[in-house]
Every structure is written in structure tokens, then in C-alpha cells.
Amino acid sequence: MLIFHGGSDVAPEMKNPEALQKHMGKWFAWVEKLRKEGRYEGGEPLEPRGKFVSGPNKIVTDGPFAESKELVGGYFIVNAKDLDDAVALTADYPDFIFNGKVQIRPIQKMEM
Amino acid sequence: MVAVLTRLLGTENLDAAEDIVQDTLLKAMEVWRFRGVPENPPAWLYKVAHNKAIDWVRSAQRKSKLLADEEKVKSSLNLLRSEVVFQEDGIQDSVLLMMFACCHPAIPPESQIALTLKTLGGLSTAEIANAFLTTDDTIAKRIYRAREKIKQENIKLDPPGVFDLSYRLDNVLRVLYLLFNEGYYSNHSDSLIREDLCVEAMRLTYLLIHHKATNLPKVNALIALMCLQSSRLDARTNALGEIVLLEDQDRSKWNQPLIQQGLYFLEKASTGDVLSEYHVEASIASIHAMTDKFEATPWNKLLTLYETLSELNPGPMVSFNRAIVLGHATSAEAGIHELKKITGLHDNYLYQTAIGNFYLMKGAPKEAKLSFEKALLMTKSIHESALIKRKISKLPLIQHFY
Image (cartoon, rainbow over all chains, first blue to last red; front, side):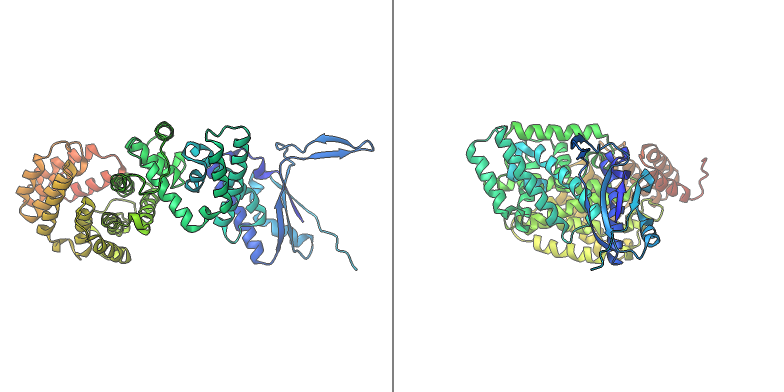
């Protein structure tokens, strides 16, 4: 699982519609490439709002906030042999230029 | 898409329609980024816009912001539910209706063009400003004025047949013609932008051809003209983006399929009893298109056509072209004489260049140089001045000082 933090979701440059369109083109191309290589399994965007529930008193707080640099914008599920292979797949991640981060987490396989 | 939504929401809600389209595109960016581009992007976009439009009508209904009565809201919702308008035919109809609304005679001409590009061409204000070499502000004002007019005059998206088709159609054709010319003759240094305008004008004219009510001889003549002119687009500039005159163009670079298409439409246009200026202009373009080298140009034929054109549509530019053709058909002397009779073009670099050319043909390089130098002072782009400097540098036996 590739979890995308920050990047173009929070970059002020993306307020310009033409720049946004151009940048998103890179994303579309990346997904397309992964799909063609049989690596892309699925993915969803996350809305930039939510709630936290925490503690034994189940306290509800607001957040994460749309401005947060750590905001998760969305995720991909990809096929990878191992972590190194998954790292290699992020080579074309378009948001590095906006200081975006990719968290790579293997999904646990159940042996049944 | 704006056209489709405006048809549903009413012209008074053109702003809302544009907002919905904007939202839809943003949504697409967000979702496609993680899910990839869907198999049928237009269908996806229409589906999302459709849902947003339903939401908008409902919330407008709640706020009773919609000035229209209950009936109208219901019919809007019904139309939305039926989804007919979102199918190919429905979309084309909507675009056509929108075109007639954008070119309504009550809207000032320069606003008509800006509004057409914005609403139907999907160009942003900045792109339109860039294409017309003017500021965002100017274009924004033009569009704003056009929208105000639509509200004031209560201009509706009426189907052809409800209003006087021939009168309104003339206006639509004129806007498309200007739009095409803006692309074809503009001094813009970016050739892509110019081509966009030409392509957009042609796309909209094709729509008129595909509609029974508007597939009339003069519409065919206009598309013929556009095809024939655009067949020369590639040959008109060299690798450096400089202008290449008709005389020097590599005619093998002319786009033959476009020429054939132009001739086909010109033939289809040759029915009925109305001879429009588009017919004459397309005929002129077809003569150039069918002549394989400049020296073989049948100038006498062109002269007759230009004479017809100046009766139909008199103006300095027509007289100017007529004079050039006359000069080639008879003598350089006569050309200069005709050119000098024209008023209103003395500040035009092409006009001075043409005089210079005839002096050169006549064997009077001194006078030619004078005219070229006058032209040089009037050019607006580097490509134009490069063209004239080339001319001057080719002048025989004259020493130049720059």
C-alpha cells in the first residue's frame, strides 16, 4: 500500500487551474503506467476532512486539517515483490517536487 | 458541457452552469489521480456534472433562489432525470442553441466572440486574452457585459425556428468567421494558440453543417473557406516561425485532404440563390489551392471574384486585395495606382509592403525601399519585421544602413 502524504494536495502552486491540470496529467500517466505493468490494483482519493476519536472517554476531535503537510490525500494498492520493489515503483511519484511523501506499507497476507 | 447545463438551468444561471463544470473538472482531477482515468472520460464527467446539477436545482429550490416558478423547476428536474440531453444528439443541440444565444445581436460583437470562446470553446479568460493579445481584465469585462446583456434582454436558448433563423445565423457565421480569422491572421508568436482558434471555429461550423436547420449553402461556403485557408497553415511559417508569403510558399506542404474537403463543401455550397461573401472568398481560396505555382495564378479570374466581393462587402481590405490582383493581372503601374487610391490602410505594414513589391516589379528599387522602410515602422511582431528586412536585403544594388 502506498499512502500519499502532503504534496500537491497542500501546495499553493496548485491553486492555478492550468498548473493543476498540467500536474495532474503526470499523475494520470503514472497510474496508467502502473496499470499497464500490472502493478496497479486500485486506489482512492480521501476527502480532506475527518475526525479523531481517542482515549477511554472516546473524545471526538476535529482533524486532520486540510492545510496539514502530513495530510493523506489518497492511497494506491500495488503489486510488489518486496519493500524495495515497492520503493522502485514510486520513482514516478509526481509530488516529490512539492515535498510530498509516500509511506510504503506491506499489507499482511493471511495464510489460510 | 456548459451549454448542456445552461439549457437545463436557464441562461440566467449561466454562472451556476460554469461553476458546476469547474467543480466537475476539479473532482475529476482529484479522483482520476488515484483511480486512473476512466474508460469513457466524457461519460464520467457528464455523470458527475449531472448529479451536481440536480443538487444545485434542489438547493436552489430550497432557497427559492430560482426566480422561476415551481413548474420550471419541475421541468428542469424532469429534463435532468430523463438524461436525454446528455446523449450525443442532445449535447450537440445544446451547443448549437448556446451558440445562437452567445451571438445574439443585443450583445456587443467583441463580447460575442469572447463569450463563445469561453462558454463553448472552454478557453479560460487568460487564454482568450492571450489569443487576442489583450489583458485578462479586458476579456473579463467583455464576458461580464455579455452575461449582463443575456440577463437584461432575457435571451433564451431558443431552438432555431423560434426566432428568425436567417438573421441570427448571419450573426453566428460572422462570429465564427472572425474567430477563424483571428487565429489565421493574428500576429501571435505562439502558433499553437492561433491554431486552437482556427480549430475551434471549424468545429463549431461543422456542428452547424450537421444540423438540418442550419446546413445551408452559406454555412457550407464558410466551412469550405476555412478548410481551404487552413490547408496552408503549415506552409505559412518557416521553421523559425517567420511568415512565408503565398508567393514563396512550398505548395507541396499544403494539406491536400483539407483542400479536397474544402472543394467538396464549396460544391455543396453552390446551390440556392444566395451568393454570400463566404462563397466568393472560398472561391478565391480554391483558385489559389488549385494553382500549383504562383506564376500560374489565373489573375483575371481572381479579379472578377474580387470585384464581386467588393460589391457584396465593400471595405479597405477587399479593395486592397483587389488592387494587388489587378496589379498582377495588368501591370505593376496599375497596381500602384489602385493601391494609392485606397484610404484607411496607410498605417498597415502589408499595404506599404504591397506598394513596395509593385515598385520592385516595375524596376524602381529606390521607391520600393522607401515603402519597405515605411512598412518596417508599422510592424507589430518580430516575424513581420523579419519578413520585411528579408525583402530589403534582397533589393538590388542598394546599400542599406543597418
